[in-house]
Length: 127
Image (cartoon, rainbow, N blue to C red; front, side, top):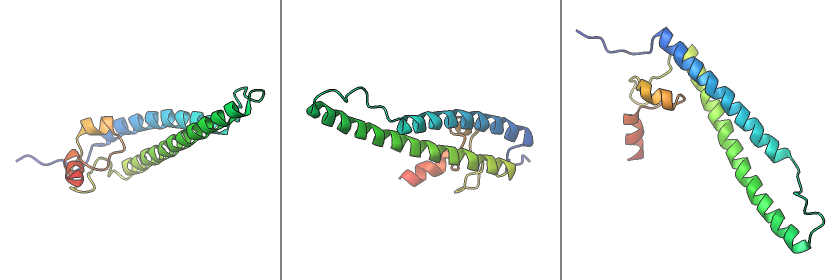
């Protein structure tokens, strides 16, 4: 009689913790770069050019800043998801699908370490 695994072993959780911590470091570096780009007030040398060019440049810069701001917000959300995954590891609930209660496949967690739903549950949600 085989037992169905209900949670990952401590050694598996350590493996996922290292993976998540590495992703968290990378994500924080990316966020810092985005924030640095947003706070950098570079005029791109357009002060001495014509008014029309300055207006076009300002419009382009505004669009770019909005896109960077959206990217930064997404990156912050990603970091929060990774931090929540670390909490689940500490609680030993990491990798358990919040819909089905079954273990999420290791392959999925290696690709999306902050996942809280199995592929089965995710597909059901999208249909």
